[in-house]
Image (cartoon, rainbow, N blue to C red):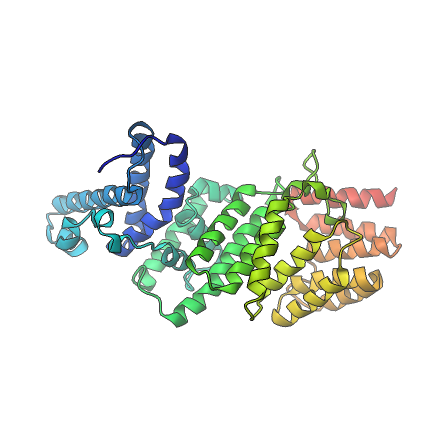
Length: 419
């Protein structure tokens, strides 16, 4: 295959971008997720070694597919020889595919991008939420098992087993990358966007461990959502999700102090906010809202935009935010939405109004006793002039979080009120 001029600096980014496309093509062709992933990893290693020296091929995707296909064929042949079952080669790798291994390079019609199908496969309804996230990060995001394990605070062996089980469950459930019907597409799109939202959120608000922010995870959630929107540009909720991520991530640099401590929204230095990301998010949201039907991600993005466009905490349009949270609560059955609605109600009608809403939330088993409920109650009690009760709630909230950075912030607030 002819090679273009050397571009060592761009090869790593290119390989990351091509990985889901190549893996999807291999899974579709050979119907074996694990074998396809192993072959693609070998092809990526070969590219990482050869491209910086020899230059990036004119068709890097076709090059990777060719090398990965050759690895699978070699593996099948070796196994067939060892077991004396040449029929295995015929059954697993049809003759026409053996002859046309590099078809993706020469035939434009064969250069199909299966990234969307791979993303939907990783969010298979048979998988648990945790397994879908792990498999998506591994197969589509290109993160290593060790990186995923570190992000979710589990041993690498545990994460490897989780991913392996997910692959096997997908393999048993259906033919990999079989064409999705429109009904199946719509049914799975909700799962796909939810998984991407969870990936981003885990990076932006880390649920456990010493770090407050995992920018690698939030950035990966952004990248994958951009990819999904490119593949389904007419899906308004995908656009709404990307806008929400952009508008939220724009505040990342101001969320922590120089010492790594949590800085709440109303105390953040807004000059540190990423104005380019805010502008992009607002523009995307504006276009999306003009299309008609509004979904939960678009409403959340609208709330984020109101925060981001306010020149100061005091200038925030809390009545509009309250109205949007009331709309969002009607659209979703999510106690965390109700929790944020209580905050908005307190900002508009006073802390007692917010506290009354929190008392009503105590009847919801999904959120009763949650550390975020206690933290919000503490903030509202402080605003209501009850420092002693607020300090007790901050301390209880600190006991309930697995994030050491968040725990330190809550304990600091509790101690300050006791002085």
